[in-house]
Amino acid sequence: MAGWLVKAHNAKNQVLGEFTQHAEQDYFFTRMLSDKYGTQPTIERLLLNGSIGPIARSAANQDNFSTSNVIPFEQQNYATLFLSGGNSSWRKHALFWHKQGFDKYIGGVTIEKHFGEASDDPRGVYNLYLFQYLQK
Image 1 (cartoon, helix red, strand yellow):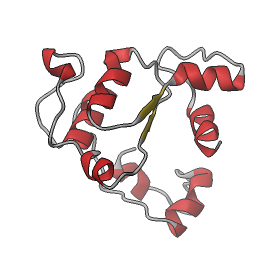
Image 2 (spheres, rainbow, N blue to C red; image 1 turned 180 degrees about the vertical axis):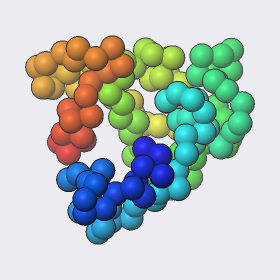
Image 3 (spheres, helix red, strand yellow; image 1 turned 30 degrees about the vertical axis):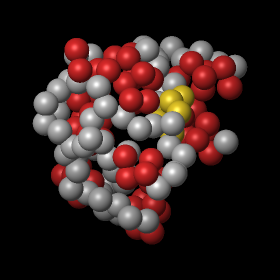
Image 4 (cartoon, rainbow, N blue to C red; image 1 turned 60 degrees about the vertical axis):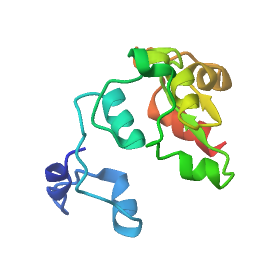
């Protein structure tokens, strides 16, 4: 969500709706811009600290990148999980993110099976199911 839209929120223009309580009580960073057009290139750049992409669907998709933001957590023996509402085979996500240090990848199919309901969205499960699964 663009920062300018968030700044339009006020008592008469409830842009944030029920999220307002979190915006007021939690850390809420309003100066976030997508690095590239599209989910995958943005995720890659945020997690790999790189400017070249898309990598996951390139010949370099089997490489481990030393710039991965997951490495410090891996080095401190944290269990890391990449949870996605999308299909794990999309852009070879499951394989690619495992190579970048994530211990486990859970995609939309697993979430659909958990709730016993298939998504009609071609991009994956709805965020509602993603967050409910994460709470589980």
